[in-house]
Length: 135
Image (cartoon, rainbow, N blue to C red; front, side, top):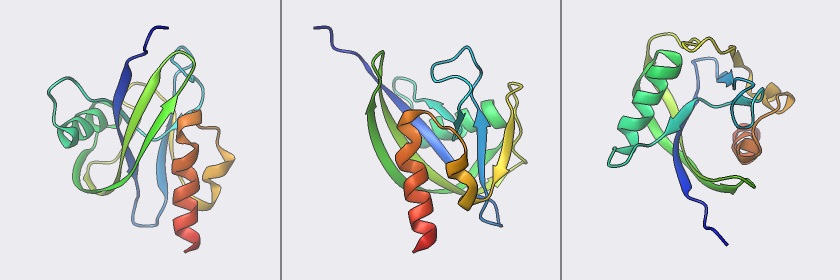
């Protein structure tokens, strides 16, 4: 049986001063398309994780990370690929996020996150964010 390559992904859970979370909609032609996601992307070979997070957030939504902290790490196996999500809570950034690639984006109150359909691998992120909010 062929071993699938695990894709290392830097993910930003971006929070504003009101505690809302920024999410973006995946294009329909991508894996898990038309679902909402926390912005981020692949860490390139030899690239520093935080440099990758900053680069991906700049390329996708036009912000520069100024302060972030590790939030959680997830391994998820889809039938067609495996991902390692390195998730960071971004609490300070420069710029106002928007869909640089034309994707739909929005700020969502924490309590409403579960109303959005996320890729399967993102479920535990939503659960942990909402669990942390309840204390």
